Length: 116
Length: 115
Image 1 (cartoon, rainbow over the protein chains, first blue to last red):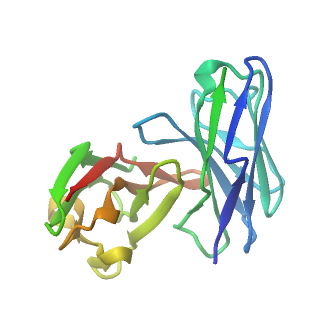
Image 2 (image 1 turned 120 degrees about the vertical axis):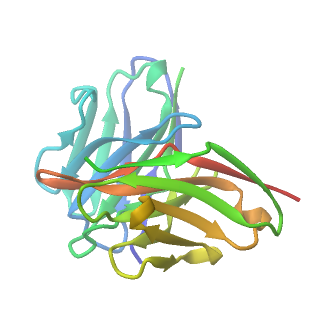
């Protein structure tokens, strides 16, 4: 149980285009979803936290107009990288938790974004 | 604020040898601590977690960790390394913030297992 999926698993796009990444909780209702980015050989950095039906809370230094997060339902959150540039190339990982999993997050498999 | 520090960005052990990955925490309140494993190009898998119950926590794949308040440590161990243990390991702590409790990750330790 507590499976989280991400789509796509990898994406290559041209500079200036926008890319949408989906994060789904497959067998539970996610009250909170988290988005992280991970640069090569580095740790995960939290980008934003989103609760279903409300605006995402962004970490300091993360541009909310560049990284649009939508948590429209209890099983789906999307991250849109707008006007992507090569420096946005990274590994993006989402996680989710449900009511009752207070301290534990369940992670998706990640999405590798390469911006040419 | 709560944080964790992982000592050693890279650890190499021989197959069959003891695995010891170090994690120290900083917290003014009883911490909730986690160890995750990440294989190349994959997400994170929970190995084990400490939530103020037993100080010796057993996880999956033969890993365990001991919470030592006096040393502010939560080191990860495995008696005998297997080739399949080669991966990146992250220690994490719940960071209590107004309106949310988020995970704060250490910088990670890459484990190499030598045949």
